[in-house]
Length: 127
Image: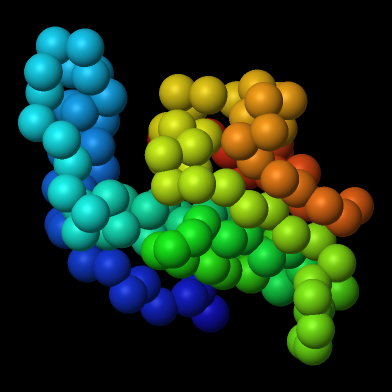
């Protein structure tokens, strides 16, 4: 059974469109994305990842907005997970939308990934 969405798809698409418009017009003075829109876009695309890579072997953290467990394999239940991916909201959205690659983000240090299953290359971009 697929995970239940918490973010309304219409609100998620709207927040994502606002973020993408801000990225496209970053130098041209496009309106900045509100904290609420950024949080909604992050959570919305993380829910897409949960649907694409169901499981509980990797914890994906995008502080301060969201965290989720994804990817099939041994389930993590207590203490610090052995497979963790952590990044900031802007990098997460860039990865999920294809504006940057997993290799670029990990090489730059924008993504911190630890554990054998913590490579999300096979699941990204989501769009």
